[in-house]
Length: 233
Image 1: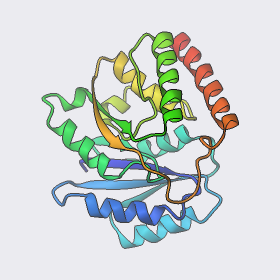
Image 2: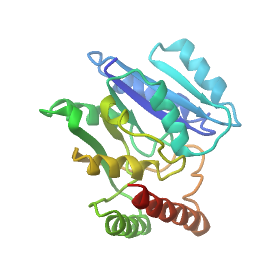
Image 3: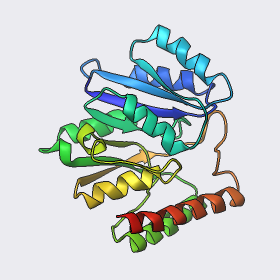
């Protein structure tokens, strides 16, 4: 297996069919890949919908989390279940195209030392307030952790399995993106960024990016984890 694309799904029953059909459409025949859909403790019909698509398509796999304890834990569960030499994750909300995962894979495969590279999207077309919010968090993370970091939560993220095997005890929440990005910098991996279009959600709603209160909670959790990460490393 060359590539594993992990997609954490929390109550995404309406988006899952779109994810599978899009992945089927953009996956080149020459690439042996799997789509690992993580039922991240969903309370809707996500589990049933994933199982239905597993029966239809051999490239669809499922990892299951009995009770949701966070976005990061869902991805980590999927990464552990994945079989690919290269591992990638992206969101289930369809705001970033599944085709970006194949772009990221093609980018890393062209490098002289793909095992020492970390590929990450760079979001375009976002609302002004969200860009301002992201800039502020990027400046904070850069100052506290001493590494130049920007658009930390951009998708997709792709790297060789050997990088994943060097990491342990990642955070269970939305700080998961920060942890992997920072560790790639710390371990002196070559960071490759490429532009990705950021679109509106088709179905469902964000579990945090819907209000000032939600953003405040996200900021607080991220700040707490950042200081813990600095102490730990």
